[in-house]
Structure formats: C-alpha cells, structure tokens
Length: 156
Image 1 (tube, rainbow, N blue to C red):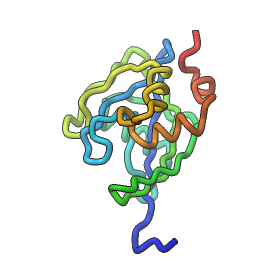
Image 2: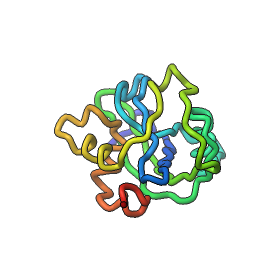
Image 3: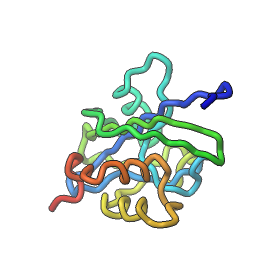
Image 4: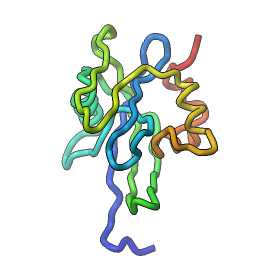
C-alpha cells in the first residue's frame, strides 16, 4: 500500500485512575473525535521521551502533576474518513498529589474532565454505534479485555 506522502503520527495518552478505580475522561472538542470521550494526551514531540509526553500533555490539559509509570497498550488507529492514521501509546499515570483534581485548561479542546468508571468507558466503547468514545480508546478496550485488572480499575 502506497503512503502517498502521508505518515502515521504518534499520540501518547495517559490513563490516570483514582483510589476508587475511576479514570479521568473528557469529551473532545478537537475536530477529530468531537464529542467523544478520551483521556488526556496528544502528539509526541520530536526527541521527546514517551513518559515525559504523557506528563506534559496531562499537565497542559488538566493541571494535574502525574508520574508516568508504564506503557500499558499500543493501538493502531486509522481514521478513514479523515484520512488520518495514529499509533497511540497508552501510558499509566499516577497523580503526585492524590487530592489534586483535574481542571479544564484547554476549553477549545475539551468540554471538561470527570472521573468515569472503567466499566462505563468499556460499555460505551463496545456499544454498536461507538460514537461516544474516541477511536483509540475503542481499540484499546477491544484489544485489551483484561486491561482494567492491569490498571487496578473497577476492583472493589
């Protein structure tokens, strides 16, 4: 398959959970995936370390100081209609201050941040329409059915 001069981009996406196993999610306002739930993240900069990218993007978007701890999954995300292709690297992140709450720092990119149960994200991602969740998260849930155990989400 010819690339026609187009190349995939790399996105780094942080999955941050709280003591109750919920994850930070927000509805996107960016042109790609408008109105769909996703996690904090963005493009990997030239020469940037993966964990540094997750920490930077989370701070820029939510004001949260996190420590990225491990890569948990990689997805191959082809947006056919938009003619875009991403390789998304999902990174587990931990808040440095467990009392710190996310804030909406980029109102042009996100409706706001909230704590969502992992099961809710999974159910929305598995829904037939799949319109509620951003494609990389849909692929993450589909390809990693045991991810909530690895992340420590949803366990009582």
